[in-house]
Length: 425
Image (cartoon, rainbow, N blue to C red):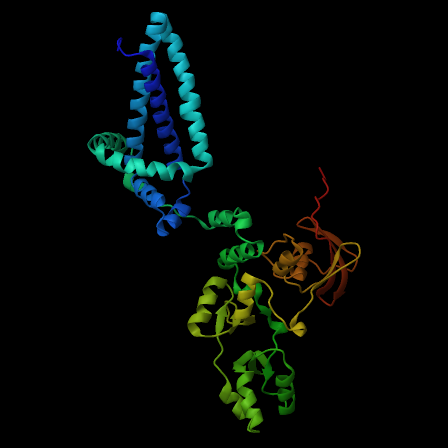
């Protein structure tokens, strides 16, 4: 060593520090790669991504080769520093040399490269993957020995490499990914993706047309009234029943009726021949399951029943799709306005308005795990039929009863901004 010029020693030390920075930065880069983006790039046959993915399939081997290399160059750098320090300042220079080397390694071979790799993992990890592949092949016997010892120690504390969790996202984690996508996913598409994730949380009871609002054909009516109803209805499929919806006999598609009307062969018997057996849906069926049921049954409409078999409402395929894409009807006559904005910023809301629809339209957060309508929510809260002029606070939203009719809260004035309840302590 004494015969080697100091310039050569300093050059070797500098080279070792570069290697140390490479090992430190590449470790951080490879371990912080987005696994889902890595899979996407690997499927697209990106060379660096393919090699990085292969290395990450056995992280114990990858960490082994990185730490072997990093520790080797750091130890060798320490030895060279000691030689240089002794030659420059004698034994007293050992302490100074150790302190300086520690600072240099910390700043230039640890913090800086690791920060760079954390900010731009792909720029560091993909080129490094080209180096680690051959290096792992050359150093495999030594890496294998180190891994055997390390894995044996892990087994003694109950940790097994085979027990490592597979990369997967829960529903809430996937929701966070969608929300944090930012400009990469347009807001409209974000809303649709989030609505799809929510389908299993929503049941047909939440979106059904209530029983009293079902439009259908009563076979006990006179024939002229039935024909007039078919001609003027805004729906393409209607339930057909006797006396009440509880005695439904089927559904009729008005497209099939037109040909009979054109041939003047349409009567009650012909109508009954066109009926399709009704589809009954339990009220607690999640929307994602019912969507698949509609697809399997090749149906577009069904009647919602409770646990006693009583009909509670009607749900269509369009209702479920609107939960994903929002309202898409183009028929103005079918659009029902449940709320009207007032000059003071409040809203006059129909008591039968669906709470979920209000939350979506007015950006509110009224509870949806109880009553489905605003009227039901008020009655549950007050446990009585309120008088007009009554004010209350529903989940922080000021609400005023404007009009009641019988046992129904018909109209309410709603503030769409939450307020804190007064402190009564």
